[in-house]
Length: 207
Image (cartoon, rainbow, N blue to C red; front, side):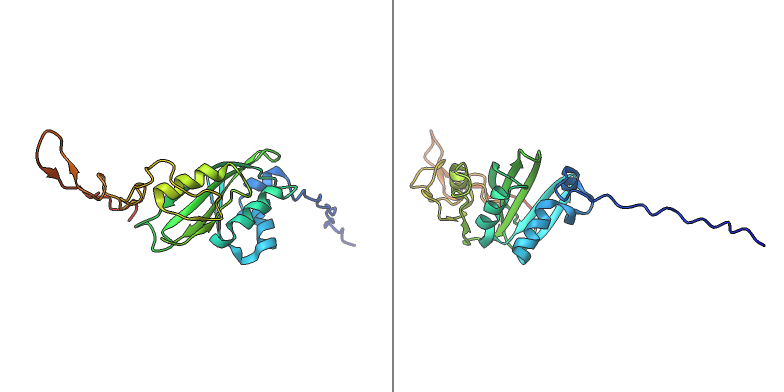
């Protein structure tokens, strides 16, 4: 008679996990992020890409759905990204082929104590829906992006310049291909000559 040395290990029941637990916002698998999970379920292919870098999550969405996605993130009972911290734009010239610009929204959920970055890529001349109906604080921020980058926010209640004069006709100063001294010649005081504008020699970081 031989002794049976094998013993059955007790079955451990897995404790149900809270789908809204704060640690999921920082999980190694970015697909577990509650905002990513809910947006994919609600909007599907509207989510173009998700990037995690140093515990910061960036969700890239199709530009035409920016307002809808923003409203969903703000009004969702659990996500509750009610605070728009900042809205700006990035000129990705020489860093990628297209789209040229990123409209960037920095959001914060007081309820969950987490931040979220939302991006929508747009080409030169392509408009993006205004998020002023979602966050009224986006009003002046969108005007600044329009003034400095030339990005048109469709549906903005008063989209006009706020930093440059109304008759400004020298382009958009925060674009990467903008010359240091602008496009026009300017008078050099105390002399009778004009000095040519100097173009930037920016070659593109990482290019």
